Amino acid sequence: MTSPETPTCSAKGCRDAAVWVLAWNNPKLHAPERRKTWLACAEHREHLSQFLGVRGFLKDVVRLDEWVQPEGSERERP
Image (tube, rainbow, N blue to C red):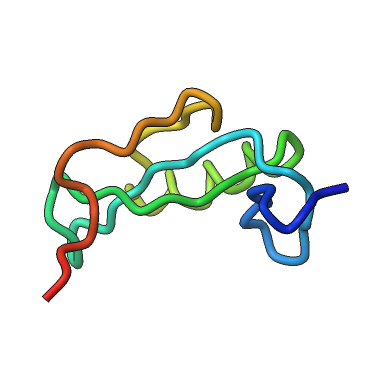
Protein backbone atom coordinates (compact mmCIF):
# COMPACT_ATOMS: atom_id res chain seq x y z
CA MET A 1 0.00 0.00 0.00
CA THR A 2 1.25 3.50 -0.81
CA SER A 3 0.58 6.89 0.69
CA PRO A 4 -0.01 10.04 -1.42
CA GLU A 5 3.67 11.05 -1.07
CA THR A 6 5.06 7.59 -1.92
CA PRO A 7 6.37 7.41 -5.50
CA THR A 8 4.49 4.77 -7.47
CA CYS A 9 5.32 2.53 -10.41
CA SER A 10 4.86 4.01 -13.89
CA ALA A 11 3.49 0.76 -15.37
CA LYS A 12 -0.08 1.14 -16.61
CA GLY A 13 -2.54 0.31 -13.84
CA CYS A 14 0.14 -0.38 -11.21
CA ARG A 15 -0.04 1.56 -7.94
CA ASP A 16 2.74 -0.33 -6.14
CA ALA A 17 5.57 1.60 -4.50
CA ALA A 18 8.45 2.39 -6.83
CA VAL A 19 11.81 0.79 -6.11
CA TRP A 20 13.69 1.66 -9.33
CA VAL A 21 14.31 4.73 -11.48
CA LEU A 22 14.62 4.11 -15.22
CA ALA A 23 16.41 7.09 -16.75
CA TRP A 24 15.80 7.53 -20.45
CA ASN A 25 16.19 9.93 -23.33
CA ASN A 26 14.65 10.08 -26.79
CA PRO A 27 17.57 11.36 -28.90
CA LYS A 28 15.19 12.69 -31.57
CA LEU A 29 13.50 14.98 -29.02
CA HIS A 30 15.89 15.62 -26.13
CA ALA A 31 19.38 17.06 -25.67
CA PRO A 32 21.91 14.26 -24.95
CA GLU A 33 22.28 15.19 -21.26
CA ARG A 34 18.52 15.32 -20.61
CA ARG A 35 17.09 12.43 -18.59
CA LYS A 36 13.42 11.70 -18.29
CA THR A 37 12.42 9.13 -15.70
CA TRP A 38 9.98 6.34 -15.21
CA LEU A 39 9.58 4.66 -11.84
CA ALA A 40 9.21 0.91 -11.48
CA CYS A 41 8.22 -1.56 -8.79
CA ALA A 42 10.19 -4.79 -8.54
CA GLU A 43 7.63 -6.63 -10.70
CA HIS A 44 7.66 -4.15 -13.61
CA ARG A 45 11.33 -3.18 -13.72
CA GLU A 46 12.27 -5.67 -16.43
CA HIS A 47 9.21 -5.02 -18.60
CA LEU A 48 9.64 -1.23 -18.56
CA SER A 49 13.41 -1.57 -19.11
CA GLN A 50 12.83 -3.77 -22.16
CA PHE A 51 10.24 -1.35 -23.56
CA LEU A 52 12.71 1.56 -23.36
CA GLY A 53 15.73 -0.56 -24.34
CA VAL A 54 14.21 -1.87 -27.57
CA ARG A 55 13.74 1.75 -28.67
CA GLY A 56 17.28 2.72 -27.70
CA PHE A 57 16.00 5.14 -25.05
CA LEU A 58 17.14 3.48 -21.80
CA LYS A 59 20.22 5.13 -20.30
CA ASP A 60 20.36 3.88 -16.71
CA VAL A 61 18.50 1.86 -14.06
CA VAL A 62 19.14 2.93 -10.45
CA ARG A 63 17.53 2.11 -7.13
CA LEU A 64 15.15 4.91 -6.16
CA ASP A 65 16.94 5.51 -2.86
CA GLU A 66 20.24 6.02 -4.76
CA TRP A 67 18.93 8.20 -7.62
CA VAL A 68 20.54 11.60 -8.14
CA GLN A 69 19.20 13.78 -10.96
CA PRO A 70 22.13 14.37 -13.38
CA GLU A 71 23.35 17.94 -13.86
CA GLY A 72 21.72 19.52 -16.89
CA SER A 73 18.94 16.96 -17.22
CA GLU A 74 16.21 19.16 -15.78
CA ARG A 75 13.85 20.74 -18.26
CA GLU A 76 14.78 24.34 -18.93
CA ARG A 77 12.05 26.78 -17.97
CA PRO A 78 11.30 29.74 -20.26
